[in-house]
Image 1 (cartoon, rainbow, N blue to C red):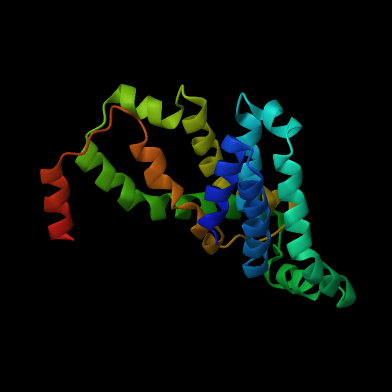
Image 2: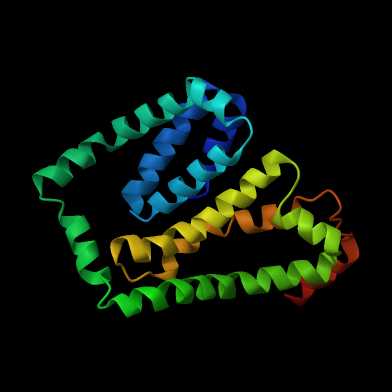
Length: 210
Protein backbone atom coordinates (compact mmCIF):
# COMPACT_ATOMS: atom_id res chain seq x y z
CA UNK A 1 0.00 0.00 0.00
CA UNK A 2 2.91 2.35 0.64
CA UNK A 3 3.94 1.85 -3.00
CA UNK A 4 0.38 1.99 -4.35
CA UNK A 5 -0.41 5.30 -2.67
CA UNK A 6 2.14 7.47 -4.56
CA UNK A 7 1.31 5.75 -7.86
CA UNK A 8 -2.41 6.38 -7.44
CA UNK A 9 -1.86 9.94 -6.24
CA UNK A 10 0.49 10.87 -9.09
CA UNK A 11 -1.89 9.37 -11.65
CA UNK A 12 -4.74 11.34 -10.08
CA UNK A 13 -2.70 14.54 -10.22
CA UNK A 14 -1.76 14.03 -13.86
CA UNK A 15 -5.12 12.85 -15.21
CA UNK A 16 -7.70 14.25 -12.74
CA UNK A 17 -9.46 10.97 -13.45
CA UNK A 18 -12.18 9.94 -10.98
CA UNK A 19 -10.94 6.36 -10.73
CA UNK A 20 -7.38 7.33 -9.80
CA UNK A 21 -8.61 10.07 -7.47
CA UNK A 22 -10.80 7.61 -5.55
CA UNK A 23 -8.01 5.02 -5.60
CA UNK A 24 -5.57 7.55 -4.12
CA UNK A 25 -7.94 8.30 -1.25
CA UNK A 26 -8.61 4.63 -0.55
CA UNK A 27 -4.89 3.80 -0.72
CA UNK A 28 -4.07 6.65 1.67
CA UNK A 29 -6.68 5.43 4.16
CA UNK A 30 -5.55 1.81 3.94
CA UNK A 31 -1.93 2.87 4.40
CA UNK A 32 -2.95 4.81 7.52
CA UNK A 33 -4.79 1.75 8.81
CA UNK A 34 -1.58 -0.22 8.40
CA UNK A 35 0.74 2.31 10.03
CA UNK A 36 -0.05 5.78 11.31
CA UNK A 37 3.33 7.04 10.13
CA UNK A 38 1.94 6.74 6.59
CA UNK A 39 0.75 10.27 7.36
CA UNK A 40 4.26 11.41 6.42
CA UNK A 41 3.89 9.82 2.97
CA UNK A 42 0.61 11.62 2.50
CA UNK A 43 2.20 14.88 3.65
CA UNK A 44 5.09 14.46 1.22
CA UNK A 45 2.69 13.93 -1.68
CA UNK A 46 0.70 17.02 -0.69
CA UNK A 47 3.92 19.08 -0.67
CA UNK A 48 4.80 17.67 -4.09
CA UNK A 49 1.42 18.62 -5.52
CA UNK A 50 1.64 22.15 -4.09
CA UNK A 51 5.12 22.59 -5.60
CA UNK A 52 3.90 21.84 -9.14
CA UNK A 53 3.03 24.74 -11.49
CA UNK A 54 -0.31 23.05 -12.25
CA UNK A 55 -1.33 22.92 -8.60
CA UNK A 56 -4.25 25.34 -9.05
CA UNK A 57 -5.67 23.37 -11.96
CA UNK A 58 -5.50 20.29 -9.78
CA UNK A 59 -7.03 21.98 -6.73
CA UNK A 60 -9.87 23.46 -8.78
CA UNK A 61 -10.72 20.06 -10.26
CA UNK A 62 -12.82 17.32 -8.69
CA UNK A 63 -9.75 15.15 -8.12
CA UNK A 64 -8.53 16.29 -4.66
CA UNK A 65 -12.06 16.34 -3.28
CA UNK A 66 -12.77 12.83 -4.52
CA UNK A 67 -9.51 11.71 -2.92
CA UNK A 68 -10.40 13.33 0.41
CA UNK A 69 -13.93 11.89 0.32
CA UNK A 70 -12.72 8.37 -0.47
CA UNK A 71 -10.12 8.56 2.28
CA UNK A 72 -12.61 9.63 4.92
CA UNK A 73 -15.17 7.02 3.85
CA UNK A 74 -12.63 4.21 4.18
CA UNK A 75 -11.30 5.63 7.46
CA UNK A 76 -14.71 6.42 8.96
CA UNK A 77 -15.16 3.16 10.93
CA UNK A 78 -11.64 3.45 12.34
CA UNK A 79 -12.11 7.11 13.26
CA UNK A 80 -15.31 6.24 15.11
CA UNK A 81 -13.50 3.43 16.92
CA UNK A 82 -10.70 5.84 17.89
CA UNK A 83 -13.18 8.26 19.43
CA UNK A 84 -15.03 5.50 21.30
CA UNK A 85 -11.79 4.07 22.75
CA UNK A 86 -10.34 7.41 23.80
CA UNK A 87 -7.71 7.43 21.03
CA UNK A 88 -5.82 4.58 22.70
CA UNK A 89 -3.44 3.79 19.79
CA UNK A 90 -2.40 7.44 19.57
CA UNK A 91 -1.99 7.72 23.35
CA UNK A 92 0.09 4.53 23.29
CA UNK A 93 2.25 5.79 20.41
CA UNK A 94 3.03 9.02 22.25
CA UNK A 95 3.73 7.10 25.45
CA UNK A 96 6.53 5.09 23.83
CA UNK A 97 7.83 7.73 21.41
CA UNK A 98 7.71 10.87 23.55
CA UNK A 99 11.05 12.61 23.80
CA UNK A 100 12.52 12.58 27.33
CA UNK A 101 14.05 16.03 26.91
CA UNK A 102 14.30 19.04 24.61
CA UNK A 103 17.92 18.15 23.94
CA UNK A 104 16.90 14.70 22.72
CA UNK A 105 14.55 16.32 20.22
CA UNK A 106 17.39 18.34 18.71
CA UNK A 107 19.69 15.31 18.59
CA UNK A 108 17.06 12.89 17.33
CA UNK A 109 16.09 14.71 14.12
CA UNK A 110 19.65 14.91 12.68
CA UNK A 111 20.26 11.32 13.81
CA UNK A 112 17.10 10.20 11.99
CA UNK A 113 18.20 11.94 8.79
CA UNK A 114 21.70 10.47 9.11
CA UNK A 115 20.28 6.95 9.43
CA UNK A 116 18.04 7.56 6.41
CA UNK A 117 21.09 8.71 4.45
CA UNK A 118 22.87 5.54 5.55
CA UNK A 119 20.04 3.40 4.21
CA UNK A 120 20.26 5.23 0.87
CA UNK A 121 24.07 5.16 0.67
CA UNK A 122 24.44 1.75 -1.00
CA UNK A 123 21.84 2.36 -3.74
CA UNK A 124 23.35 5.77 -4.43
CA UNK A 125 26.85 4.25 -4.60
CA UNK A 126 25.69 1.57 -7.04
CA UNK A 127 23.98 4.23 -9.14
CA UNK A 128 27.15 6.33 -9.13
CA UNK A 129 29.33 3.41 -10.24
CA UNK A 130 26.98 2.34 -13.01
CA UNK A 131 25.77 5.70 -14.34
CA UNK A 132 28.91 7.82 -13.77
CA UNK A 133 26.86 11.04 -13.68
CA UNK A 134 28.57 14.32 -14.43
CA UNK A 135 27.91 17.57 -12.61
CA UNK A 136 25.10 18.58 -14.97
CA UNK A 137 23.32 15.27 -14.45
CA UNK A 138 23.70 15.51 -10.69
CA UNK A 139 22.18 18.99 -10.66
CA UNK A 140 19.38 17.81 -12.95
CA UNK A 141 18.71 14.98 -10.51
CA UNK A 142 18.67 17.16 -7.40
CA UNK A 143 16.46 19.90 -8.88
CA UNK A 144 15.09 19.08 -12.37
CA UNK A 145 13.80 21.74 -14.73
CA UNK A 146 10.92 19.45 -15.65
CA UNK A 147 8.10 20.13 -13.11
CA UNK A 148 6.87 16.53 -13.17
CA UNK A 149 10.30 15.20 -12.22
CA UNK A 150 10.81 18.02 -9.70
CA UNK A 151 7.54 16.97 -8.08
CA UNK A 152 9.04 13.54 -7.39
CA UNK A 153 12.11 15.12 -5.78
CA UNK A 154 9.91 17.24 -3.51
CA UNK A 155 7.87 14.19 -2.55
CA UNK A 156 11.00 12.19 -1.73
CA UNK A 157 12.45 15.02 0.35
CA UNK A 158 9.14 15.47 2.14
CA UNK A 159 9.03 11.81 3.11
CA UNK A 160 12.19 12.36 5.16
CA UNK A 161 11.93 15.97 6.29
CA UNK A 162 8.37 15.82 7.64
CA UNK A 163 9.21 13.13 10.23
CA UNK A 164 12.30 15.12 11.25
CA UNK A 165 10.18 18.25 11.74
CA UNK A 166 7.68 16.28 13.81
CA UNK A 167 10.39 15.69 16.40
CA UNK A 168 10.25 19.40 17.20
CA UNK A 169 6.54 19.93 16.62
CA UNK A 170 5.28 16.99 18.71
CA UNK A 171 8.26 16.12 20.90
CA UNK A 172 8.62 12.55 19.63
CA UNK A 173 11.57 10.20 19.30
CA UNK A 174 11.83 9.20 15.65
CA UNK A 175 12.24 5.66 14.37
CA UNK A 176 14.09 5.03 11.12
CA UNK A 177 11.34 2.53 10.24
CA UNK A 178 9.07 5.50 9.58
CA UNK A 179 11.01 6.18 6.38
CA UNK A 180 10.81 2.67 4.93
CA UNK A 181 7.92 3.50 2.61
CA UNK A 182 9.89 6.26 0.89
CA UNK A 183 12.86 4.43 -0.60
CA UNK A 184 10.98 3.01 -3.59
CA UNK A 185 11.05 6.55 -5.05
CA UNK A 186 14.84 6.90 -4.77
CA UNK A 187 15.81 4.88 -7.89
CA UNK A 188 13.08 6.62 -9.90
CA UNK A 189 14.53 10.02 -9.00
CA UNK A 190 18.11 8.88 -9.66
CA UNK A 191 17.37 7.33 -13.06
CA UNK A 192 14.90 9.94 -14.33
CA UNK A 193 17.35 12.41 -15.99
CA UNK A 194 17.45 11.80 -19.77
CA UNK A 195 21.25 11.95 -19.64
CA UNK A 196 21.44 8.85 -17.44
CA UNK A 197 22.15 5.85 -19.65
CA UNK A 198 22.89 2.43 -18.17
CA UNK A 199 24.57 0.09 -20.62
CA UNK A 200 23.92 -3.61 -20.43
CA UNK A 201 27.44 -4.79 -19.61
CA UNK A 202 28.08 -2.99 -16.26
CA UNK A 203 24.54 -3.75 -15.12
CA UNK A 204 24.99 -7.44 -15.94
CA UNK A 205 28.35 -7.53 -14.17
CA UNK A 206 26.88 -5.92 -11.08
CA UNK A 207 23.89 -8.27 -11.09
CA UNK A 208 26.18 -11.30 -11.22
CA UNK A 209 28.40 -9.87 -8.50
CA UNK A 210 25.40 -9.42 -6.22
